[in-house]
Image (cartoon, rainbow, N blue to C red; front, side, top):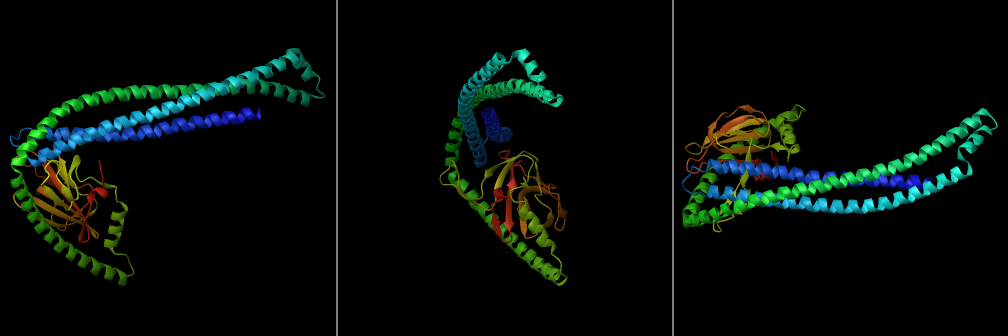
Length: 402
């Protein structure tokens, strides 16, 4: 009896481990799949917005390459999910095989026990066993003993059968999930085949762009010159803001209080990796730092922030509570907005129309400007930077994708 209880407990624990392990693995992959599918849909939408353009641009090629990468990542994730399910199914089959052996053994043991019980006692002997008691309490105890013994035999076997049935159900679910994912993977591969046509187009676009590679590099140089001027403005404003912050800190020390800048900076740092995306919908098409273009070998950029491709007429949104330090014009339909968050600063540029002015207090998620859409290619890009005092930091490490 003790041995039976221990084995049943072990089997129950094994079942819990199997089912919980499956859920965690599959759920994690399903979440990743949904995120990639969302990115692909957005990339498709953004590419459709550029369809009116007659001339191929670097932004279009970058966006198309981004979509290709996302589809490849999605197919790989589906394959990972199938592999994970295959491992779980194999493990479940092994567990079920072991359970069936245990069940057969227990059924045999209890069949023998029942045979012995009925052979030696039977119903009449059971009654005699009860009526031969010395007193009423002993009779009651013997009656309860017989009832509990019978119930134990029945319940234990039913528990084992139930456990086996549950694991079989789980295995069937895994098989169904595997078939479903394989079907989805087949569909995704069909889409990948359609995407090959886009790749052919991409090759033609790259050929066309390479003829203009010299001009593209000149445009990038001009952009870098513009960025350098903006960087100088930002550094000048940040230096002044830091000077004011130090004055406020000194005053706070005299009054035995904590400065507002310190509190705001501390709250900002605590939200690293959880800050909201600066647009409702967007995909990062320009990474932080020195990067080489994925298709044009001679084209490199040194990005102080990230570039986010978004939808036409999209609004830029403040990532955290703060105060507007600067709104400056960078040319026609291009403004930059600098917002102070204590000793941290967020920059939003390629803003067609600003909704705020210097000195305005802004809240997390507040719309601060409408992003400019390039007339030549229909691309809408927000350039976003994050600074810790005078040093640019990688925004991708701080913001959370929608």
